[in-house]
Length: 303
Ligand code: AMP
Image (cartoon, rainbow, N blue to C red; front, side):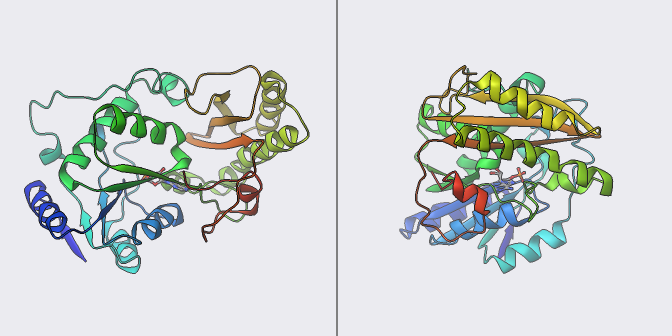
């Protein structure tokens, strides 16, 4: 495994690799790796060359958010990267990615407005800018993202299409802890009490799935019950709970075949997000991954 910090060196490596006819798969991360990241790396390992970036991107954090305290452990991350047989870890410096005078952001209209865009208005322009930069540096054929950040994945897919990045974007299912909490680097902020409290999110998702499976299609009716489940937990504060169109991410009133239930909740000071696709169609699972039985029930699969 090679660690590259220099942008030019990364570009030269990728040029050489592509000239050899090899397919480069790319997994962008902010580090502090967990099994969710590992599932993306396992998918990426199926291709000739696997590049993972570790970069805590300052431009996607708001002024009062956790950029400085975001968990970091490079030694552990490199150990995991070795275990997952990553070829290249790209770990640039902030000063090289954002030199003085940096002025360019990428706005993906509409898709960035709802859900996390409501409370984090500049978040997605920072995400889209860093991913566009990483695409131009790593020059992958394939890039792999997690459905845990469903809105982010939709925005990246749209950006890649609109800006003609010749890159296939692959989405991978949410990986959860045994008790249902979606894995996240931010889970490390939770103390024992908050960790227990965080399970209200999965309970809420399960409630929605059960209602949907029993025939509920009116989103107000489902959301009312889902909110109740979260509000029962004293340590929780809802940022948003919404049911949206899976393509446009706009709120919908009635679910036709498929919809996205998206949740952002503060547990104490920690903001956690989660989601699930409510779908009539149970899609057969063909991939061997460690997502949970309940994900299988609603037919999560790579898209
Ligand atoms: P992050 O390091 O949090 O920026 O995440 C890097 C990538 O890992 C993103 O594409 C995330 O969507 C994905 N990811 C994070 N958590 C999970 C999870 N629990 N399951 C699947 N993918 C995840």
